[in-house]
Amino acid sequence: DTAVSQTPKYLVTQMGNDKSIKCEQNLGHDTMYWYKQDSKKFLKIMFSYNNKELIINETVPNRFSPKSPDKAHLNLHINSLELGDSAVYFCASSHGGALAETQYFGPGTRLLVL
Amino acid sequence: AQSVTQLGSHVSVSEGALVLLRCNYSSSVPPYLFWYVQYPNQGLQLLLKYTSAATLVKGINGFEAEFKKSETSFHLTKPSAHMSDAAEYFCAVSDVNFNKFYFGSGTKLNVKP
Image (tube, rainbow over all chains, first blue to last red; front, side, top):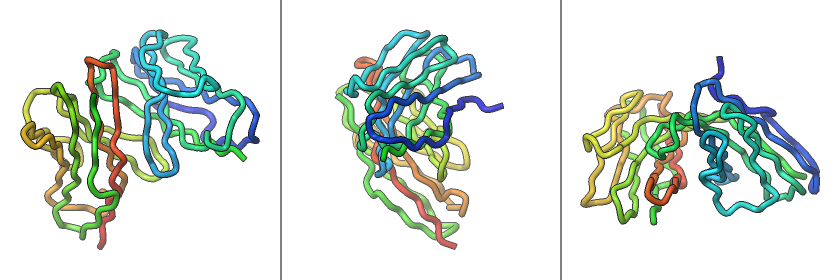
């Protein structure tokens, strides 16, 4: 069983479109995260949710909106996609909200905006 | 505020040689420090972490790291490189006081036969 799963694995879309990436974890963790990894492999945290409550919200355009229907899911919705949004997006989860906890990462979603 | 610097974006070693990947952090308070590994086309996996217990931390796959407060460093080492160690390695620091988490820019390890 996959611990942290993301769908889709690949996403190719046109500028201006709206798209969603889904993330699910079956580890029973309380906290979930979204990261963006750019073409130079630089990883930056975008959001963190603990028990469906937003606890980290880094400087990210408001075109990006996370949604957590329950603590096992954290989806990322992106409006009006731009070329610069092309990246690999990773979902992660951890037990508890403390940043000392080990994070478990999904396989990533490779987004290409044309 | 926290930040983390990884010296050397690419490191190349021969199989069987010592692996040393450097990580320095800046922090006004004792941080929590992590090393993660990313294999091609995969997500990140924790190698080891320092959370203010023993300064020498042992991780998976024979890796270890030593927290040196005086040098603000958390370098990752492995005595003998294996071909399967070829991957991207990320150092990370968390500041629980400010609820911040940062990854370094990564070091790509190449292992030559």
